[in-house]
Image 1 (cartoon, rainbow, N blue to C red):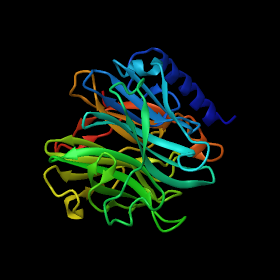
Image 2 (cartoon, rainbow, N blue to C red):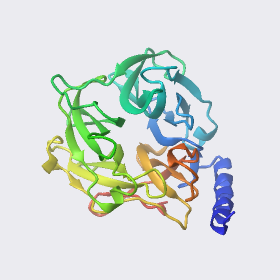
Image 3 (cartoon, rainbow, N blue to C red):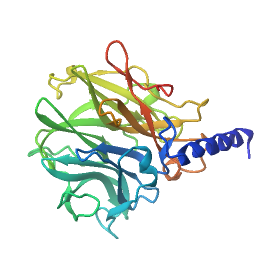
Image 4 (cartoon, rainbow, N blue to C red):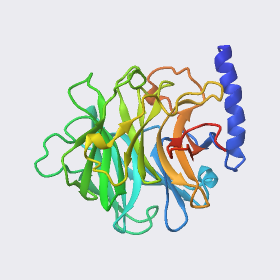
Length: 338
């Protein structure tokens, strides 16, 4: 074992002690081995949590009154992958949304016999208790009428947000073959299961930090502040090079106009070797118990060295960071935020 890995494991044990304390420690695991973490605080006061399970074979939900209590909260498998055909492999990045008085789960899935044929799918809950009530499949997310370019290739990481009385979906999609870039696209939604407008390409990997091993923009998430919409995204491959970028627009702007958006020249959150936080990204946003303090829920590993494909290393843990804003109102993602 290398000295570097030995130090990582010692630090890892320290972080696990914080995890076991059941108090909220920023930038320490809140849920182990859950990549692509998504936390939503509902009107009932509960925090609902989901994320990619290491086997990529089902969708789990849990809830708790506090974020720290999510660690020990009972988990409920609300849906399992099919044995074959659609939705039979790589169940990735579920998100739980409450839209028009109903619960929906958005996730990506592929086929056993075509494992990289990722497409976005939708589940709808037939009741008001998403942990216990029945979930039904609503099929693949539907593109707008006449749109023959959306969801025709590797598509994943769909999220939903609202602005100016309109509801939007943002997702990652890779077109043009095996070596093409994964871009972020945006469209207005007609309903929870169908888009209203054709896809609009929001961002493509422009800079070197978005092109490490793979050209990737994925994992979008939205936070608002002072009349602005800030959309974080993740870039590059899923190892220590994984990092977060930022898009911004005026909340009342035409969000389907490329000129409405500005993109960060450099990553806004990336690996911190000193703190043993490697490959932070694929985040979501929620608020603290005071209902105001914004929190960033992200995944990261406690070590850099990975054997084999990083996608199948299970130790991407869900972590939480307090979000602060700079003088211009932009979110600041700093591991020292307290």
